[in-house]
Length: 445
Image (cartoon, rainbow, N blue to C red):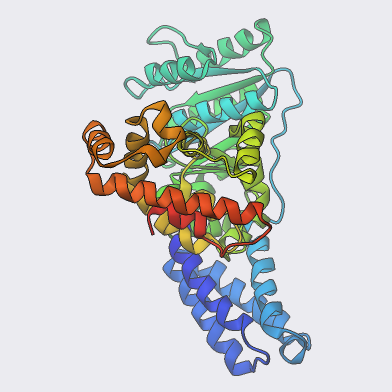
């Protein structure tokens, strides 16, 4: 997400950082480029105008242009203004009632049903006991989809016979949550156009009966500025408490995320990426601003690692690395752990100084390069994985045939692995290799 905007802003801020002195003319040029970058990212015009005006005002209102490291200070102003536009603070769900009701609303096709399941996964990780309630009575197979997702994630789904009104399903779902000792009820409602008065009235009636603790509006980030108009229309009829922006991995521009909070006053609670049931991340304005400007997001990276990586196994692997006993079995295990953590391009964007490699890393995954590496290692015997030095010509041909790759691919992987072993040896010897060495080996660069 934000690839285009991030690349443009990073280029602008890098030029500013390198300047020992900045004139008003330099500032004008930089702000003009920032304005164009934001507009090209489909950010709302009014939001862009205010953004640039605030940065200019704060830059000119101090001795910043003639002070120490003026370029760095302007970059900080851009960062601070990004945080302000994005909402300053994370929106925490209010779930004090027993059970608390979270009502999912939005247009058709925005991803409400998938998001409801993703939210159930996240709440369960937080120690909650969620119940999913299937109240989308209009879309064919909507109930079946939620039931399948519930089975997949191990969360109960409350349903009623075909023809039961949505309001009645909501009532019975709340009672089922009480009887079953569930502390959160997630209500999946039917998608509807905000101009459909009858359908909107139904939502209003449901909200009136359930009094939800949270009403989350699910918005497709790919719709750009249209998402702002949708949010405003829904908020005019319903007590919307937060927004979920879905399909963020499919929008390289990111204009919706930058516009919607400032334009509507509604906080963004979560960002949805991909179809995986763990593809829902809390929206941290400060961390996202850092990611956009290429500063990384170490906190989110560490949290992702803690959620997906076996700490005991990771410690053993780290020890083998430091003792220069890192094998192809360890390498294969690391690839598996990386895949569990989510899209590799997104992960690279969280590492300071590595965001520019994110595109290349994701391209390697999309092109099937990592799958080829896994297939090659899987075609080896346990002894070959532990002792790759025994893999001579005949073995290489067998491995290539078994993995559906070429002998050249096997040769390349083995060469890369030797380079990685040298890298680990440098670490264990207290030397620091250049940034990107390990990634270069992974990608075959």
